[in-house]
Image 1 (cartoon, helix red, strand yellow):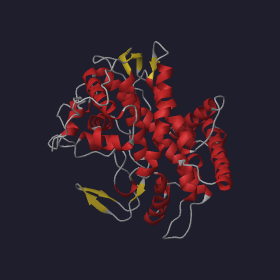
Image 2 (cartoon, rainbow, N blue to C red; image 1 turned 45 degrees about the vertical axis):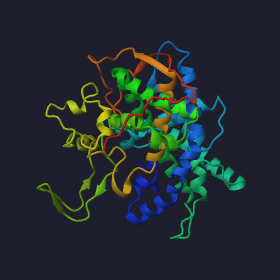
Image 3 (tube, rainbow, N blue to C red; image 1 turned 90 degrees about the vertical axis):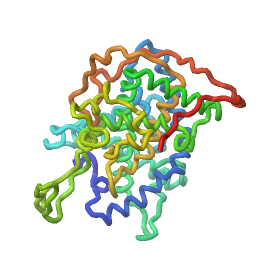
Image 4 (cartoon, one colour; image 1 turned 180 degrees about the vertical axis):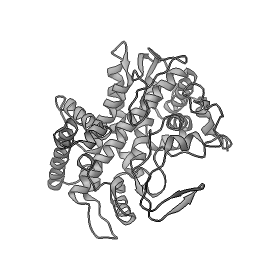
Length: 395
């Protein structure tokens, strides 16, 4: 794992002091202001993917979503300028690297550096090192990597080391690509299974376009897209990360729920089980965790039905630093998709949903294959007096 992931990222920080130090510096690249500046890149990336998918009679949304998040990885996170011939090489390197992280065979057998995953890792590290050298000569450029390179910590009066920048850049690529693409793939399945949800999403976007035109900002997401937020949260509630966070070591023996955890034991949390046993959403037959029977974004719009056990990005001081970027990516994609695309599922239906056996986040077996078509969303003039009301949030 250390060969492919390094030891200097937030996820691998051995002590709370080390973690807090990295959080202060790496966190400067993930502020709301930084996400706002990244929005034009996100919008451009989504529109490019939609343009391409509308040219095909059928398309696997897993491929579309992965291409989108990987493009954001090189454009925004690393700040690279890749030509068209280099993009497939970058995509393959990331996929090979992530594939190694999730493969016990690669992690446990010797010679990791010579595997496809090891070679993919080496390629990505070389790109990051080249970018660091470029930034040291030319100065900041607005990328996430740039923000990390020039961040300063007042408490320790120091900057991130080169290795800390490399390892945390890789962490953000993982957080902002594989997990976001998987969640979007599941979200597309949900919208195909529940066309009424897609229609509500489209109406919310119609109101936004009528008010602001085609401009899309983080502030609009935060203040005027409650249903979009609910759709993404409900997707992550039902299909979160398959496991938990990095292992932690018990410092002192303690007892929880009548079970003793001895000092020195490795422990982690289980996100799916945490969501499953939420007393607000739990159904005895387990239907609340079913993509067909349990998918109800509306539950997030009312305090009496809003889930209370929800941790798709982790919890506490080690909460996922890339959560803001991941949510911005997913909201941008679904907002523009709802505006521009209508579709039918090709293979999956409410009577038949199958899943891939191995994935960081569970994904449909077919990658959510759809038959897309241009959406006919009536856009009202910006000066119209009556626009569709946004979905209300009930306190």
